[in-house]
Image 1 (cartoon, rainbow, N blue to C red):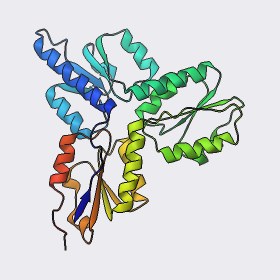
Image 2 (image 1 turned 45 degrees about the vertical axis):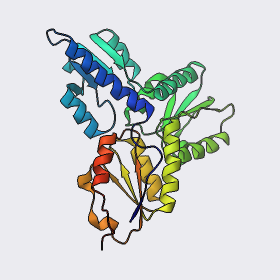
Image 3 (image 1 turned 120 degrees about the horizontal axis):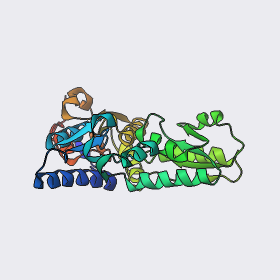
Length: 286
């Protein structure tokens, strides 16, 4: 059995930055003595990988669900950003803030705000339930629509010019389809490709790997949008399985397979990737 690996695996630059800021905050905390006011929190998971969030929690970085759970300490803004009302509330609290928002997400937030201020109806490609999209919605403020597919555009009713942006982890193929369809119905359309460059590159590479493989293993959090997209891309080409940990691997997946591709989400830590690779069968199962 032969394995194909991508050129890039593990964290993207935005996730790496967020984890680095979190780890540095813990080191700074350990150098201080005090009454516990320097405890470290994140509002929601810092990144979308349960195993890495658990590791950070063991270090002393606690993910909380609500601001009611804290009064003082250090709060890290997660890589996928926070809605404007939450950010304003944080500014009034006795907290030390560390902004770990991915620069690509920050750019999308500013574009959403700018389009709104210029009178555009903002269309966001993404999943309404995703934290990043919740943040973008708050920056768009006024008339705004969230779509996942080209068909969803039928629900967008507006006489205004349309400004198009995207969740940074969306599929480039979906972005291009929606963009083309909007061009046929909206005059003065503004299109901003806010998909993270590293996300796009991994999608392209995953597609190439899938074409050469009998099976693809996609490693990453089940709550990770970019990892889920990679799985969808690969699964349309060949058989693909999305796993978070080595325990999810099943020997029968590899029966009769000669070439197995491996790809990983941008929020998947190297240590998880190594653990999964160690459990891959070294010989062709019969």
